[in-house]
Length: 121
Image 1 (cartoon, rainbow, N blue to C red):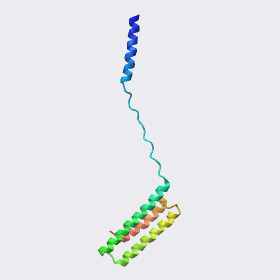
Image 2 (cartoon, rainbow, N blue to C red):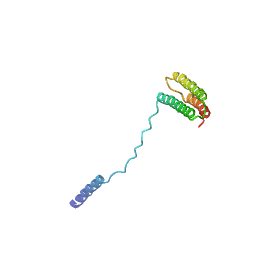
Image 3 (cartoon, rainbow, N blue to C red):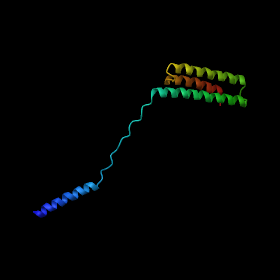
Image 4 (cartoon, rainbow, N blue to C red):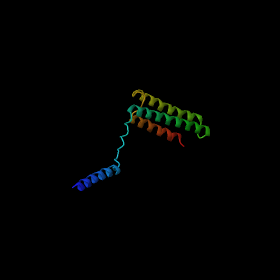
C-alpha cells in the first residue's frame, strides 16, 4: 500500500510539473475598432482640399500664361473664375463653422472640374 500511495504522489507531482512546462496556445486579441473621424475635422479637411485644388489650378494658369499658351487677359478671366469658386467655398464654410459638407464639396469639385477643362493641360 505505501508503494501505491507513493506512486500516486509521484504521478500527481509529474502531472503538475508538466502543466507548468506546457504553454497554452496564444489567444487571439482583436484590434480595437478604428476611431470614428470627428465630423468637424472632416469638414475642415474638405474645405482645405478645395483650397489646395484652387491653388494648384491657379499655378497652372500662371504657368500657361508664362509659356504663352494663352494671353494674360484670358489668364485673368480664368483667375477670376477661380476667385468666384473660392468665395463660394468660403460662403458655404461660414454656414458650417468653417468646413464643408460632402455635398458642398462635390458641387465645388464639379465647378473646379469645369475650370480645369478650361485651363487645359
